[in-house]
Length: 408
Image 1 (tube, rainbow, N blue to C red):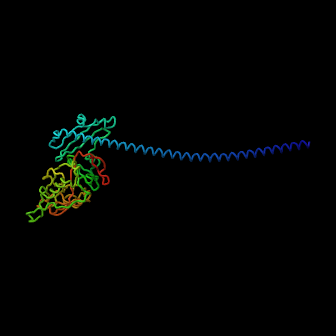
Image 2 (image 1 turned 90 degrees about the vertical axis):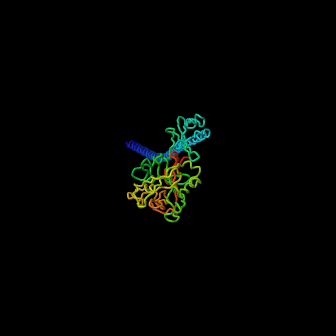
């Protein structure tokens, strides 16, 4: 009996030992499993990091591709515009060749302007068909206007290719971007467009000089004053004046020294190079005289007397004062006219208008304010010109840093 009990005790002990060993093995396996889990987690984190870098790289490459695509599109558009500009040049060259062969057809009308259609140049083999010069499926029409300029002729093309391209006239561009109603900008008055205010985008780079637009005339020509070139000084007139018994000058613009100088400047290309004179148009200039009492600006009527057919002239008194948006700028000598006036930073010098009370006084302007001086006094001169209404726009937004540029 005792032996059986001992045997049972031994078996129980062995079973407990086996259970303990199994428990230890399970513990070991469980421990090993935990370690493996940690390793798996570590491997997963490493994989996620690598994926992030790949995503960043892919995103960067996509961004680069987008930028390159946009650059290509922009360049393509510029290239197309450049291509159409070349067509405009070919239009002009074709018209010149045509009239070299048929000079008798250059008979001008009273306005000294004629035009020729592109279709006529194509039919006479002076110009290739547009289909050979522009993009596929683009249809174009065009013409060239020819103006008589003294003994030479000026040619201005116009091309219309629908949505693909249209020649843009400078006067249209200026009106499109600057027309306003109550602030600095371009105002429409009696079929003319006048710049008013202190900060206006009316800068033009022409003849490699900087000009400022005074207004767009009723015929579309653009009136501009030279501002960046150092102005010359000269007398308005120094002839003998009987009234003064001396060389105080006569204030009649039509016989003045300053008119002689302006005509000489045109012929000798002092202000405008010979190749750019084709842009100039003759105009009638308002030379009416003004009383020295300081009349209301609204009562100025300077065009009661005009000097006709002049290429280069001077600013008139009204053009000095009217750009002011100051409500107290009412009379000719009001100092308030300097306020909110883009000409307030310019020493203008001689105007084209004389005083009406005396035979030797002339209006002078500085910083948008006018005074009266003797004609024989030396003062600066800033030439004023009018450029052709069919002048094409090339580039710029009219700001001082990016002035308008004409298409040549």
